[in-house]
Image 1: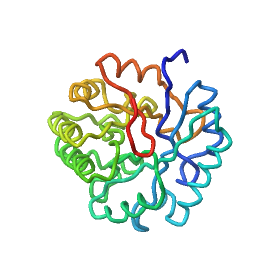
Image 2: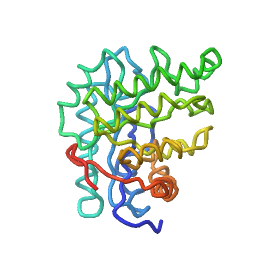
Image 3: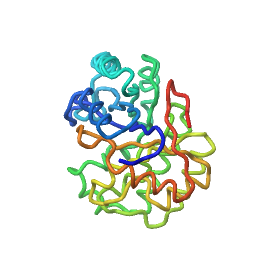
Image 4: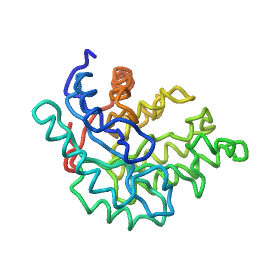
Length: 263
């Protein structure tokens, strides 16, 4: 890839979430082949049974997830730094459940993501028609209020795919709510998931967008590179472009180990 410094892909999934393919060792091998120094698995964490069940592991599968990642750690020891994380959800009312899961194992890195506005899974292609019956400015205000709640909860190390509601091309018409959310994220000392999956979606733009990347960098918010890989071939996806977008605005790239920021 011709990239400088030890690079990590810190956002990737496993088959336990029910919508990803490839064993952890295959993701690790893909990272090695791509010249990365390390990876952090961040599969969708268990949530209460009534929340988003088809899209995540069950609570009774959590130990299996940890074991699968530990097996990849052992197999690639000395060749690739394999870390254990989670992509957690922020959904008001579920914080205690999330806290219990976060206390169950020694995680390296926890992403806090908002995938629901009320009962609407707004990033699910199945429910895309709902955008037509929503006021976009209001939708983004509601979304960024939740992102702020995630930052203020103290549960997470970073905020996932910051401008996710743009996924299908519905862009934020005003931008003020996003800037306010960045103020809160900066104030609370969180990082941002720089998520290259957006380049694979209809919007064809990484999360966060270039202007939000600049605004985050100006506030001193660092970035954690992630492909959001749901199959091994996506590991390290467009990292060269990601690094350029971050470096162009003077941003910093960091990783987490034992929930402590490095870099």
